[in-house]
Image 1 (cartoon, rainbow, N blue to C red):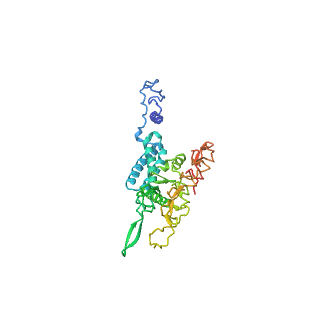
Image 2: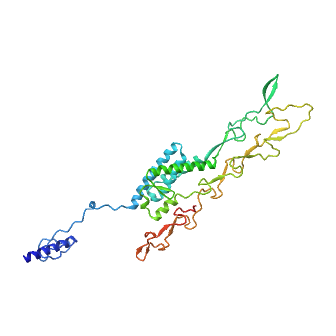
Image 3: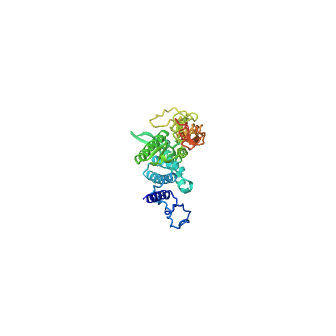
Length: 385
């Protein structure tokens, strides 16, 4: 009875050791050598080594880098398609934000994951849609958009009936408008205030669409749901600095209202003697009094050769565009870079001095990364309000 009890205790000990990965002889209790099939002491059969658990029995460990890449690639592809759709629907202000946001997200993915054509297509989309929002058509004041000049007419009374006659001496007889060269209009920038309004409305519409789809904010960037918690401080700064904040004065347009014409594109004619488009001409001595009727040009007045009779000329400061380069950002459309992080949006952790740990423990402030978002610009790389 005692011997049986000892045997069971030895067997239990052997099984416990076996469970830990050791090979113990069930007969004599001797520890076996690696790859040994028979006990060298009692010549008994040795138990077979324990097999490792199948990998499918354990939950796979998520690779954050791979997951970020998958989410990024999917989001960029979707944004590009939605941007093209918005362009097709004549909504360039919305398409602009799709392309702009997608460009910021591409910074999270290695260059070999995206062909060069993808970056080129996004960049072209940003430039194309911004130009569509900014460009406007300015009607020529001289020909009223017709491109041709109608001959001036005067009313005369013949036989008690009002009739019109062409004034052959009037300068406004040229078939092509000399101000716009027959185009009837000028291609220039639309009203700056209107551009800002269109872009802000487009941004609001874009954000509503993405947030309703479940995406989240990361600074000015809209990221796929679940991505934000996977990003490190360096990756956050990389994305946010890819969507650089706009200039406070021009809101990213890069232009401001022209101070010369106050956005009107036309200024008063400065030709010598010009008054409301007429200049003094040589007076003729005559004893006969001529009746001057409405729409007649007096003999001592001729049409100004510079403004062609309208009293205004194109603003030379802005070339009738109504706007000039923004003086705050010098036309770049971007805010001033943060002087503390130099536009990187990232700084070394002040607590661990960039080491990521204090003694042997991870730094609590930077979570072991050694870097934190710049407290001055909150990771966006620019001086913001």
